[in-house]
Length: 133
Image 1 (cartoon, one colour):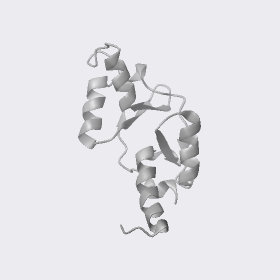
Image 2: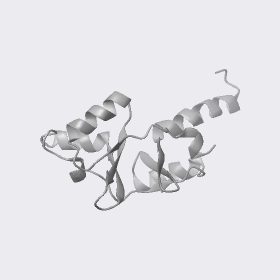
Image 3: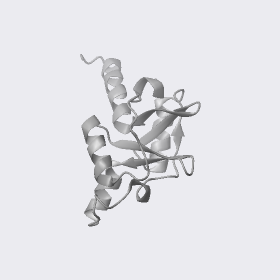
Image 4: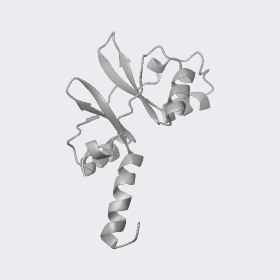
């Protein structure tokens, strides 16, 4: 199975000036765990995850005063829609993260998470074992 089969095509893109509270509200409303952060000044893409927000709030930072730019991971590993789920899982394991931005051409076309991979693998493993779905 490929990344394109598992990824979420609902990509939340925010700017670096969004506050952590704004990002959290948008992520919560869409029930997603990560936002792509596009910084037009650097032409770069980064990722802000629920863990980044949790760490900031847990450290006592004000989510209304903290901008996404200060908590965004910019050293991002990007996936291709043509990667296998095994390749995506290996990249996540190697990098110690749970989300990959999926790029195709000029921009992001999806995000694949550990949860997405598990959703795909669990039914396939049950079918292979002969367990009823």
